Amino acid sequence: MPETRILLACPQMDDLADDIVRRNSDIHRGGLDWKRFPDRFPDLMLHDVDRLVRHDVSFLACFDDPAVIFEQWSLMRHVARLKPKSFRILLPYFPTGTMERSDHEGQVATAESLAMMLSSLPAAGPGPIPVYIWDIHALPIKGFFGDNVAPRFKTGLKQLFTWLGSRGAKAAGNLTIVFPDDGAKKRFGKMDAFTKAQKKLGFTVAVCRKERVGDERKVVLSEGDVQDRYAVVIDDLVHSGGTLLACGQAVRDAGASTVDAYVTHGVLENGNWKKFDGSVFRTVLITDSCPETAKAVSDDPRFRVLTLVDSIVNAIRQ
Image (tube, rainbow, N blue to C red):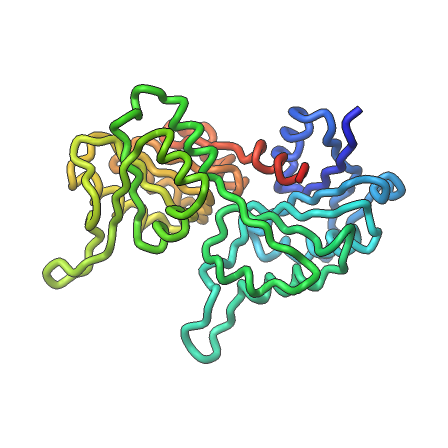
């Protein structure tokens, strides 16, 4: 009999957690009532606490809204204090990555604040609590975490390359991966998932940059060749979509035959996903790390949602 693992999840991640349990007989949902009092403070109740203590426990978190972070932190702290056999936190999207540094005196680095909140959790299980994060925006954030937690960084690129591989001859020998800037190239270009996929799929690489054209700064393709090629622009996250769209247009202007986009974290708050109307990108691929947007675009033919289920299960079993 496989060892039983218990999966707890916040309400935003219920659908993803249910999918994980359906696909994996050794992972079971933990009993949890997630309510709020009339004043909107959390009213949380764990069931079968004795069962939790005897097993490996994982919590699937979603920090896409500051209003829900406190209630999830409260639950994580309670679970950690129960001292289960092991405890891990699955946080697909670490939302304050663009504040990894302060550029001006008085500017609050909220990424550090969030990392310290997680680091204040009591130790649980053998050693620090592993916190799994997918495609974090800036690796220096790793230094913000304290000794009680151990950040573990994973990537959604495997889901993209699996999808590209399934296209077979349509992509083989004619694929170019485009980075929207040098930062994205540094983040993704050195990953094992990227280098292994490049050997398998044989794609070339191109890079966009902002350059001064006349009196304005414009996104242009400054490295690589996409003429008559199938191009996929990849990045870790997208908010307003402006930069991604500008990069896609630059790739089209450079002669690409077809242009798609892949972004691990399709935040696209306030309906920004509607900007992707098919005029620049044929298809925009995102993961389900930001569940609200993933649900909003699930029936839109211009989008494709690549699930992180297999990658999350891998983290649960590590």
